[in-house]
Image 1 (cartoon, rainbow, N blue to C red):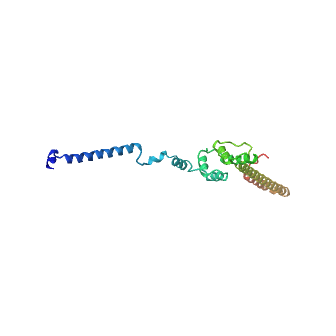
Image 2: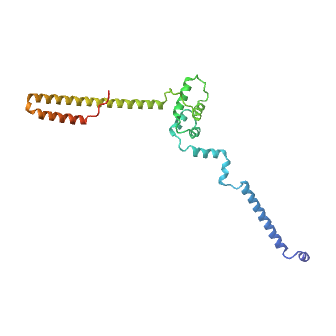
Image 3: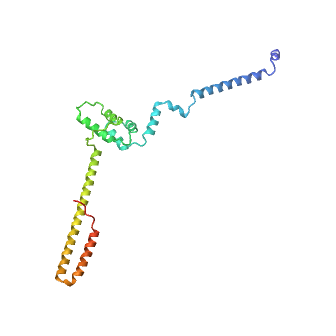
Length: 216
């Protein structure tokens, strides 16, 4: 036993333990470096490669400001809410989506039963491809615009008639004043100058208040 101890160099045990610890530490460091480069350590970027998470993120970012009323119109026609939001996220501001959906309703109503086995797909294609309905198609939007225009035209005509009636009434009133002034002047010549001045003043003031008479 003593002979064996004498054969070992001084400090060989301590040196061996230190060497094993250093090798173990180097192995751990190397393994951690490999994990960092290969992505074994979880990070916020790990989810980028997952299609379902990318779809959810895209849905949140692209469909935050879609028209909820149009979402309901699509759902009523069999399009899922998820599909509807993705679809509306790609439409332009000038696109009349409701016109396109109503045009799809018309196409389905006029087609033989069973021709469109997938009506939601028809609606999606009309909106996605921005298909414009025929010019003479009476969509709800066009009907409202026409009704508003007709209402405005009626109001303009009514206002014009009221102005013309007021003008004629004022002209009639002036005629009565003029006739009265002539009667007074003829019955009393001394007051002719006064009556003439009154007539002139009434005519001037009344005509100043009247609006300009337009053509009939």
